[in-house]
Amino acid sequence: MHKIVMKKVGQKPEIEEVDCFPLDVMQDFVGGNIELVRFPNKIDLWLNEDGKCLDLGPNLSNLLPGDVIVGDVFFASMDDDGETVGLTDEQIELCLKWLSPK
Image 1 (spheres, rainbow, N blue to C red):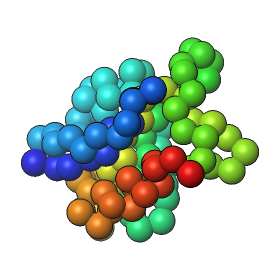
Image 2 (cartoon, helix red, strand yellow):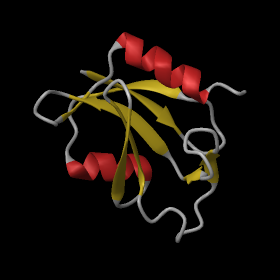
Image 3 (tube, one colour):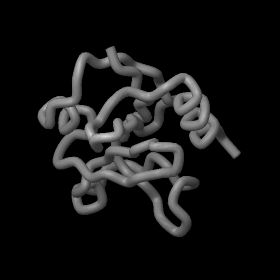
């Protein structure tokens, strides 16, 4: 099982476990086509690439300077081959720190 951090619009972040990362599952998580934003420490943010055009609700305003991330998102990691994998406990802690109210 792989651990991810899910952040749905208007809700607190949750740690969830998934078996694998096929495209359709990732698209279900974000409600449409996926887009990747890479962060330090091999942490990847997956979001709906059409979220703003679809007027999805604002979700995160403190991760990207000058931008608001809309729609449901999730954080995962990548292995040395660039494949999506679950987060380590340390990465989860860092994600939750980023998502905590300032």
